[in-house]
Image (cartoon, rainbow, N blue to C red):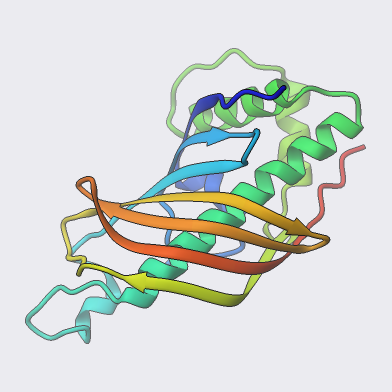
Amino acid sequence: MNEKKETLLRLGPDVIQKLLPHRRPLLMVDRIESFIRSPVPSLRASRHISANEEVFAGHFPGLHLWPGIYTIEGMGQTANVLEALMGLIGGFETAGRSSNELLDGLLALEAGYTLKAARHDERLTALLEELREPQDFMGMSILVNVKLLAPVFAGQRLDYWVRRTHTAGDLLRHEVEAEVDGHVVARGSMDSLMKVHAPIG
């Protein structure tokens, strides 16, 4: 029987850009916080909202109100990161490697990007660099059922929580939620078509 085990997986934007094809100003995930592989694959992530965001030039003049569609997009990108991780884990295990080896490799990459010394397998890090092209982890939402419950403003941090609840081939359903300071600002579900390719040799 699988037990729920939440793994701290603190990864910043440089590693996230290895897992997502999105780039600024439309990259809506700053940080991965934690990951649960089973029994329900889940991911916590976050996005800090700066007053310097380009969108605030017009939305709205004189009021730094974060567009609701950006909150929805952030939840969708978090679901995409979750599926990229699950795809990589599957690829590693198919190649006879462990999921812990993958997670350690990602943490080693993060340590390198944040100029911290890290003990890691150089061969594994090189493999991770080779295999992760952002286009290998593409997701497209085809049905979004999300309610926006409260406004979000500059200076706040959005916390995302996504859970994969159903799978039918490449079609996946995720429950999604966004919070600010522990208060839910958006909640719902997303049906997505995911194409995850992890060419691990």
